[in-house]
Amino acid sequence: MVNVRKLFIAKRGEIPEGRTKSFRFGIANGIAFNDRGTIKAYINRCTHMGGPVELMKSGQRFRCRWHQAEFDPVTGLAIEGEAPKGTSLTPIELLVEDDQIFGVLSLPEDPFA
Image (tube, rainbow, N blue to C red; front, side):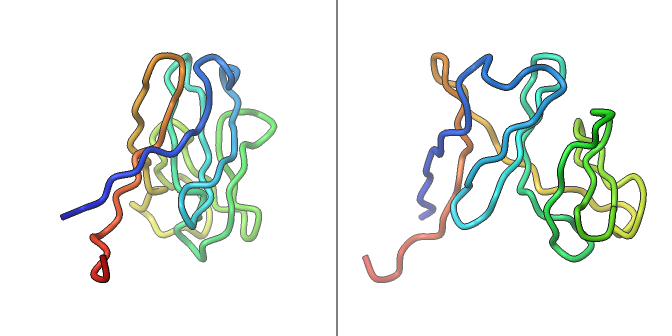
């Protein structure tokens, strides 16, 4: 059986359109992006060598801080640079309850419980 946890990401309206918010997601870092009112969230780990990504000043792409691979913030797909072609940032399933946005973290059953 899988254990499911809801981890708070942001309040609705907290992330301005075209902007991001970084957050902890279990043992990983996450990055959320407001795409014209729709929040997209990903594990913040480049598919090339695992470096963190950040939104470029143009607001049109995420760029890895280590080797400058670029990703589409709407789809998470690698679009330029050293990230392997066809790869994408790992999406995080989102759940909205009232005015709060949560990431859904699925953990394997604890074998010692």
